Amino acid sequence: INKSIFNLSNFIAEEINKTFSDKKIALNIQPDIYARGNSEIFSVVVENLTENAIKYSDVNSVINVSLRLNHKTIEFAVSDTGIGIADTDKERVFQKFFRTDKVEKLGIKGFGLGLSVVKSIIAQMNGTITIEDNKPHGSIFTVQLPAVEIE
Image (cartoon, rainbow, N blue to C red; front, side, top):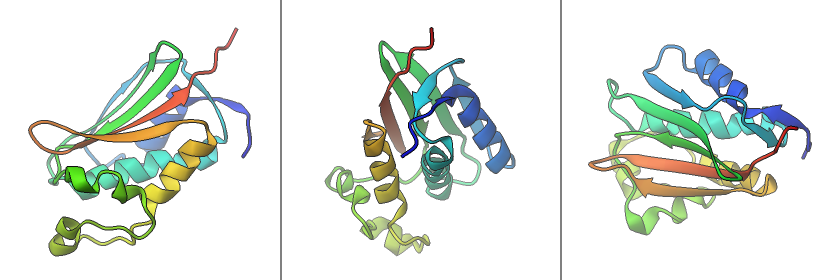
């Protein structure tokens, strides 16, 4: 993986505005946050998490995308008010081909590959991804990456 440094703040804003211009997305992006890696590969993370949030949410709901620096850690989060993920499935959604029963019953299309790819890209960038419930309903996916300090 390319270890170049890129402006993650600008990249996420541009990626969301370009790819999801017709969707209701609230951006809350702290400026001048830099990450180490390949921005083109990271676009898979941004697009997959945002697409999932849209796909599993009501058509009129707003998806929140945020980026902030928390000490020396970058926190990139995508939250929705969709169908949510059962606690028993939170780790399993990152396995290849895994799809929850709820998703199957609702007939939502997919192969169960996106999140396994996302997790692998994040791992290559020395980061982690976690899922928590977005009260009262929905999910929050949070990616944590090591921050790059620009002198």
